[in-house]
Length: 214
Image (tube, rainbow, N blue to C red; front, side, top):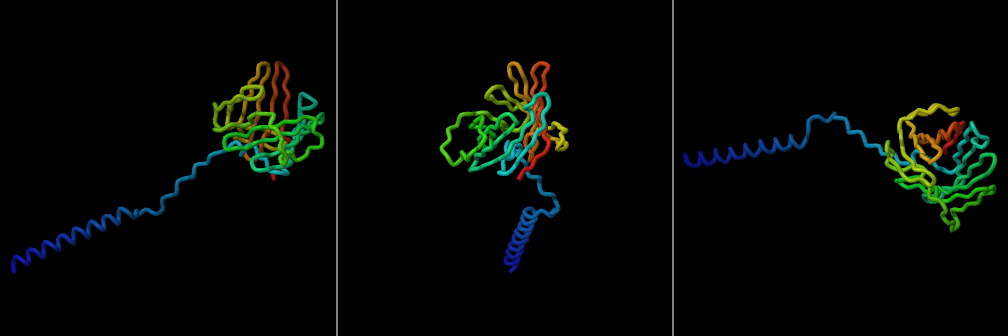
């Protein structure tokens, strides 16, 4: 009888230990602090965020330093990741087809003197250009070879004051040519807000006057 009592006590002890372990495991799997804030999602900006190309969008720039520095740009057609724009500077009207990917915004087709542009995206147009406007990653020191000059991002927090308003956190891109330098400023959700062409003592600027992004 005494032997049986000792065995029963031993079994009860094992059950108690097992119960404690289960409770401990349940506590470890269910944290008591449920008020911890969720981690902020990582925002990755793409080149297309700084060069919106929705059909019907338009931009008007006022110029200084050259009679053709003022111009208007409109988005006419879109198909897949291709967009067709028209640009009028008072002297000529140009057509561009722009390709957008996660890594870049790139001009793949250009035609000058196109006064009555037709939808080329529904045709088998032949690419005749390869000029990257913006290249990922969007950070200082990103560089790439342009059509006529090497390009690089030299700032991502530029402040630009224009007739259309003040724009902060703009990406500033530098075109380093042999005899001239061009700076372009891009604002997320807006597009290009300013362009500066500098050659010797000559400076030509195109600054955003008004815009509408559809």
